[in-house]
Image 1 (cartoon, rainbow, N blue to C red):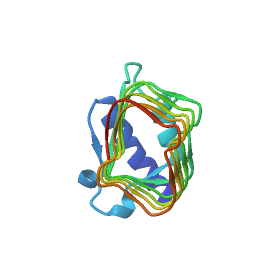
Image 2 (tube, rainbow, N blue to C red):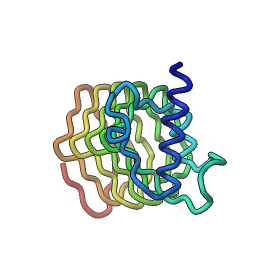
Image 3 (spheres, rainbow, N blue to C red):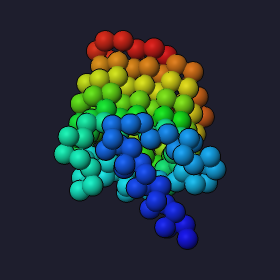
Length: 171
């Protein structure tokens, strides 16, 4: 049963996060089809709303996951370090108006639909190195401390209008 399998995968990811470890799904689940996380699960991790996260939670480090469903965390605060490396986002993501207190690292990820980072504030590093964006991307009015976006691929329109980077940018 697919739902049971996803629940087990999400339990393992939660366990790794609570242990302060990187949850690299490719190590635990060699079959890519077994690495699916729901967008609602990821949203709870990012904004710290899951009752299953330890109170001292301060980072979400996930590698090689497939995120199923539209991920919408607009206008929320993400207080911990966020690593979503080598992940595949199947549907739209909306991080518009988000405040990331620390790093957001989305290196080597793939966004199959639109990605909205408009009005996003990142007080740490924002890294998209080697990332593929297949749909429209917006960084309009984003305010970032550092932006690393080397070797990224934009297959549709991208808008950087009025984006501010206060320290370093690497394209």
